[in-house]
Length: 286
Image (cartoon, rainbow, N blue to C red; front, side, top):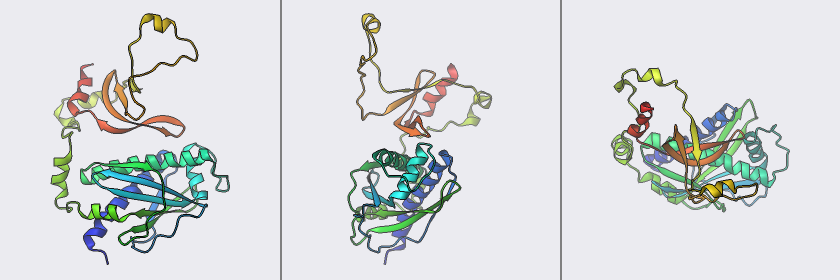
């Protein structure tokens, strides 16, 4: 039988995913109620080799180590893919490669939100990276539960969540909840990342001012002759690698970095790093 501390740590990790599903679905216009069907259990994980089951694995790193798996039927995965692309939901539709990619992007957005929720809860950062899937382990220490989701957009859907033994061990080694506030303060690199609105007189009067925000994938210097020589089909190489984060500039100043995502058919930026409050406050000088 698992120790209470283990249950608490693993349950907290599960709950940030549940909150992340709720928030991402809400952003897609499908306000949902998400709940765990049953408590975590060490019962054996059923094989996921059935072709009707879609398995997605996230490699957990940085503050934790291990793997987390989401398993669901194709009829469920296709509805989440359709929701991301603002299509009419049809559980009977063929689960195409386009749907597979969209479902992966949907879960990637959920993972990004879960990482943010985890940092808010514990003060510690984790990376949740979509990884090559394989069958979830059926080893002692593997934890599993089922998430149920209901919305006015779709009927009740169920997804199995599986945490491998390595991840469960990493969770139980975390500081206790009594130590968490101190740890949260010690682990943050941006201790002044939040603006104190009361510290700046009349700042509230400026908060509704609109500023131009730009996503920058990279840049390069060009000769004037190169600019005049541009034509359809020309390729302009930037100084940034494809796996490097994009930059968010507000009024021409670097404010944040993150990963480009697709939200409701539009490009967006999942923020992973934010400039210190002092740098953001420099916008007041504009």
